Length: 132
Image (cartoon, rainbow, N blue to C red; front, side):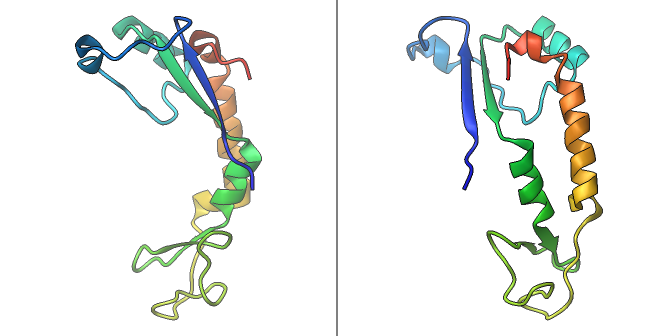
């Protein structure tokens, strides 16, 4: 199994010690944000960002996990053929109805989305210090 790697960047050489002031600061945890250079520049103007955490998950792992996802449309139940497979391939465990793969979980769509994400995030990586 492949696990994501973590990159931790901080403006100083040490983590700040917890203090009342540090505990009252605003903390933002945003998935895939900022994604574009204008978003990163706007965020940089609006807030003093001193820490960036980058979860470096290889695109192949993301593709593998997303394309293994199947759903039961009526209930919204989600199956993953690797981590949570249905008892019978392609069939919902509770109703016996067929499962479907959403359009955005199909391999060709996932590849296109990951490529677009990579193209959009390259320019803003210089602001966040990401080098991989």
